[in-house]
Amino acid sequence: MTPSNTSEVRHLPAEGPELLDASWPGLEHGALDAIPDALMIIDLNNRVVRINRTMSRQLRMDPEEARGRFYPGLLHGQNAPPPGCPNARLLIDGREHDAEMTLQRLGQCLVSASPIQGSDGRLAGSILVARTIPGGEAAGRTEHQHEPVKPGSGNPESLGVLAGGIAHDFNNLLTTIQGNAELARMDLPDDSPVRMNINEIDDSSTRAAEICQLMLDYADKGVLEVEPLDLSDVVNGMREGLEAGAAGNLGFDYRLPEGLPGVAADPIQLRRLVRSLVTNAREAIDQDAGVVTVRTGILDCGKSCSADARFGHELVEGRCVFLQVTDTGCGMDRKTMESLCDPYFSTKFAGRGLSLSAALGIVRGHGGALRVWSEAGRGSTFLALFPFLKNEEQNRANAEDGDLAQWRGCGTVLIVDDEKPVRTVGRRMLERMGFDVLVAIDGREAVEIYQANADRIDCVLLDLTMPVMDGEQAFREMRKIRKDALVILASGYSEEDVLGRFRGEGLAGFLHKPYRFKILRSMIRDVLED
Image (cartoon, rainbow, N blue to C red; front, side):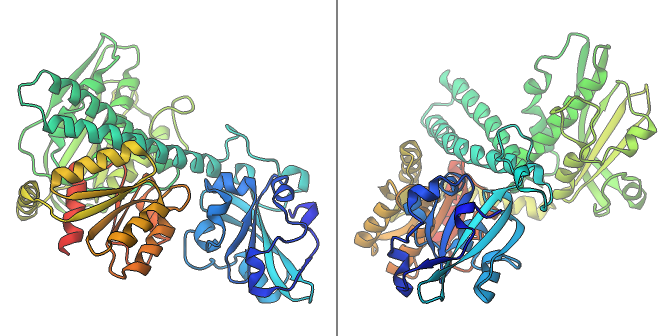
């Protein structure tokens, strides 16, 4: 596990705390960069002294940016090393330790920590090496079996990290696309012929955001962003896409009553569920003539209904809103029905379709249940049941929307992002709300601007991943200037993935990219009026 040129204990000059700034013999950049594994030098205060090129690439962080950072935050996303961390064990007994662990951004790794000793024989620091485990297999294989992971090797952890990184970068682009589409639409008269083009851009970017969410889900970094929704409206808005490319022998029957009670749901996940169930229904019909029926409505769900829900029993008794998709296709036999909840089961070729376990996860995540009826040769019916908002909840949500539409801000907001298009669209949104806006291109410039204008900056909208100084460092520097600094963190990564690094430090809020005008305005209002 440990590279051959670091297998023995290192003997270094005994400068103590000054080692962080020393050029340690045998650990020059060139030597470290020649090691193919991700490698990190750590001092006795758990601060990063140096990282090699592989670690820099996997953390997506410049080596100088990592220098001096607290290593548990970089590798584990938390303020302290987790139980069993080899480096934590090394600090106790001064010996080499290794363990199999999941590291933030690196995935499943075999992690080894080796001691570094000063010339006086005392422990001076450690070398931590992380080697990605191909395929997520267990540790304990021979040295030659530890091959670097190549794209397409099928390692779920590595592919998850890759998917999360792509989603993050793409969400930055979508912030610009969606934001400019919204701002353009606000300036257009209702009868403008250009409005249709703007709506198409907005709809397409929404679909792209859904794909990003799927990648975050694959990376296990997804997050539900719930709002009141009308199921009929959701399906109506998807009809063109649901029918795209359908054969002439396939018919669609929509039964979507107006004025349904609202459900508290994530719009991306709900559209994902609808699209999946309809796609499965279309493919069940295949080359034969048939009909896909999509219905929404209200259903009284008593004890017998909950007991009959083949998948999911969490639904509270009472009236529910339902989504039902029925096809006249091939149906399923008993054996297929018994395998439906297996996350790896599919009747399609690799890479097609959303497994029922994932669909069930969406339904359960919204407090609902799923019922399935099918018989070989006689089609299938999938019925998703959701609790709906009570009248007072719906009225409160409507009232809050009305109040928000009338709200105007005042004061100054500092927006920090290394992407110029994101800064520009964010600035235009904030100015439309009534704010004066200052901009910074990275964390270092943001701290300088904040230092000079701390008395008049009311709030900071801060990107997380930036060169020179990232959002995490900039946030801490701003809090040194003003303990009550109000900072909203913006990122294409998920809230759960990011906030572990800021737990207990007074972050004012988190804004997931791409964000819409309404979401940004709501966040700013809540932070300033709290």
